[in-house]
Image (tube, rainbow, N blue to C red):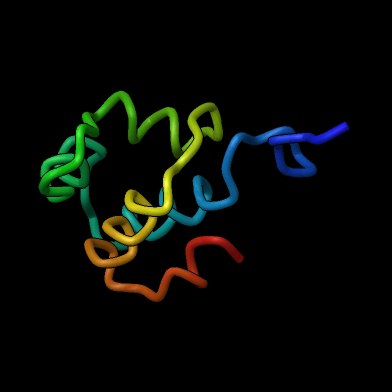
Length: 77
């Protein structure tokens, strides 16, 4: 049987890190979403990512890392 959730039941590994980095840059969820050019992500999607309710694609992970100015590995540690 395969499980698509982390050990804490989250649908992604990066949500907590995205939230912390976003807050460190003093960005709102809406501002972060607006900076993810070319992706269909709105403020509500950012909220769901941060609380672990939404899966994050590899393409989204790359863009999040660019906008948050970190390496991808920093988001998933």
